[in-house]
Image (cartoon, rainbow, N blue to C red; front, side):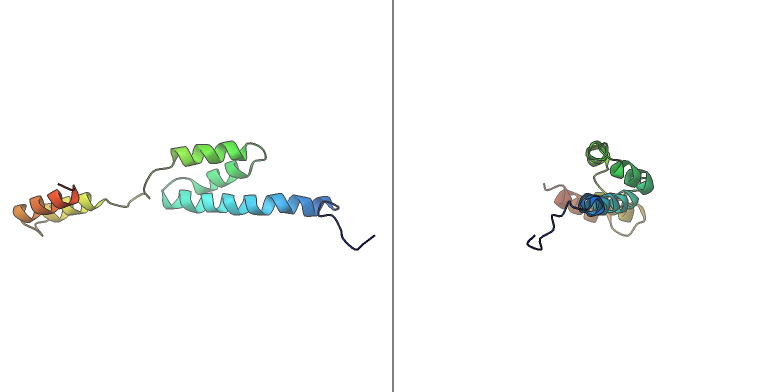
Length: 102
């Protein structure tokens, strides 16, 4: 024996090699889902299910919204400012044209 111990000599150590990164990934999915107004705990559980976790991770990535819940686009903010009377119609039209890239 040369003092080297194979990492899979103990089943527990071998399991840790796979579970720790997977739990970290599931936690990141949980945080992202919560920010987007989705059920973070549900997605966390689905992602850590052995073998099916990869499938549910792909489903989550496909289904998640493109922006966090409650986050407004610049055009929505501009419309609200115009509706509250903070800017004139001329300013609104000019800013809207700039935002739309025209």
